[in-house]
Image (cartoon, rainbow, N blue to C red):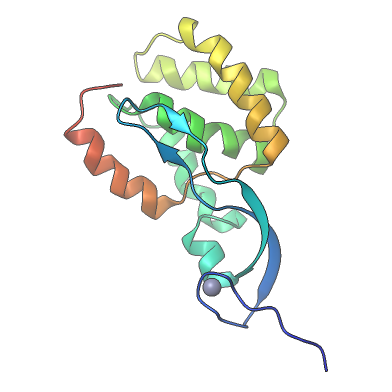
Length: 152
Ligand SMILES: [Zn+2]
């Protein structure tokens, strides 16, 4: 008898796949990213994949983010959502990722010049680890934080 994979998040045995899954990303009070937990290959079920932002259907919201100007959290959105999405989901080249981010910064009325170099590091990091974008539910929770936070 074949042993079924169990989802590591909810214990379900339905539609479970072994996928590279970033466990968690932690950010300090200044908004700097501290990647304290690495990505692992984990068994994950369909509904948890959806909840955590995996699968092509769940990325539609990121295209909306790219069309929306933000006043706060722009670097975090770039590092944790846009770069992983453009790099590992859309599989864009570095030049295309840079152009897309530059255009989004313009839309946000935010200077891209100082971010050019950090972006190249972030791109390499995200590509090397095959990191997935932050989940939509987590992003929505964070949006409430930006509203009461002054750093961009
Ligand atoms: Zn699950």
